[in-house]
Length: 256
Image (cartoon, rainbow, N blue to C red; front, side, top):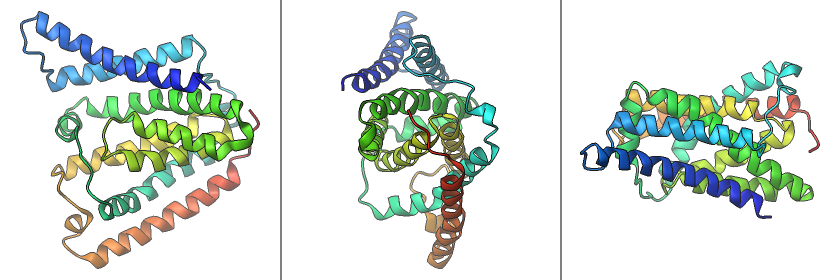
């Protein structure tokens, strides 16, 4: 099916062309083409807003109030709890894997430390990404091959990982994409996905602000105590697993 690939390419092209436009303006104003952190944040905000406008105006994504009118406060709450419970286990698993290139480490670090970083990373970013990757790409994939739901969810998660353009982030993004895909498949709404995505990015933002050294590992955060790391992973699982179970109970399966 060609539409999901088109949605992916539109998302990528908007990001690339928006950055290119800001770089061109910088050069016209006598700069060297290197964007300051302020301008990077403005460019990120602009690309997210353009993506939201394009995908809603074209009806490629169909956000509606229907799901929120059912007052799914329990689902939204447990979505946030699942995100909180997933942070430490995800960090621990990533630390056990071979180290992958982190090609945007410095750039993302500067944005995280900027006063406007929270707005683009934790607020605008999740809305734009969920609108595209679950609200457009996964929706069309499930409509195309509804009998192969997990295959379609996996494909959308692959697109989600790929769009991060950063090998170090891709494994985590793929796993989170599977979870978000499951949530969308059950509810046919991006609202729980946005709640999870917002909480995930907010925790990452706070952790980076507290521990800005990218070489920091869990064992460093817990003062070199491996036993404390194990206890933190176990405690987090006691949050994550019940949250997933509650979501399973509360998210009623919806047909496309």
